Image (cartoon, rainbow, N blue to C red; front, side):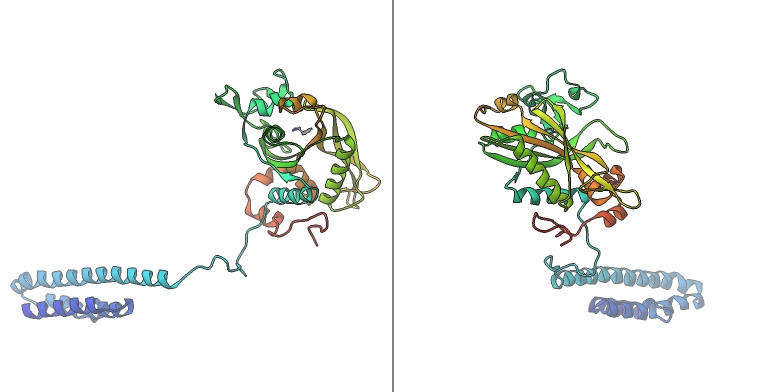
Length: 363
Ligand code: PHE
């Protein structure tokens, strides 16, 4: 009996070791430990043995079963690893292949509008400029002629950091994209034509305000720039953006510390049959404010070490989220930043949907 068991064990262990793949290994397992298996058969004989025989033979049969079980597990681990290595060696993922029938991502309306703005203004000769979202109060306020006492500087409107920067300036989350005007004028020689789209932050939160929102700044600095250039640029931009020619703008006198004169710009809307407001129409039913603008204040030009008698210009600042809502008929601003995939699938854009002055987004 003992030699039978030893013999069986060495046969089975050799078979386990020799199993070339998982299917062969499974066959060995069934031969040994399956219902009709050899080891199972031996275990069944235990009941018929005398107590003395059981004492000597029982432990040997059990250790046989353990040895076979353990060998099977070890071999299975090795074969699994081999199979994985083989797969890794043979399968390659070609990242350049089109995704085909699989679900694809989409471009968020805010990113879409930023790309549209970049395209439209590129056609007008504007470059895209950027600046940091963590600003200092000189670029965000002081250089823009915003006095120390201005309410926009108040703690309850602006997110300040506890730290000051190396020059002792207060650090904050920029409250508008206008500091990019300063960075551009300080950093490069005129003539300047830039737009600066990006994130901005104010301590504000309700159905039409989120603490983080998006703006696009525009800046032109050159010799002999007038409000005529500003008006033409804004009209050309708004018509290209809303993809229709019958758009009327209304310019209202306003006040910003960094422009003089300053004006707010409204776009005319008409109502469709269901009463919905549609941007455009030669005879507007009403007006919606879309941006602030004006001629760059000479103090701002001086703060950037330029001579305001030589260099003039205009600037404008416009809420991107609002532009997206108006153009694509989205009513709740908060949904923009919820990250709800159903919303993104509905309002998202294909990667190539970018309009130019010559061709709208649908072309
Ligand atoms: N920075 C202003 C704002 O956030 C907008 C603006 C920009 C106005 C440039 C005039 C010129 O409200």
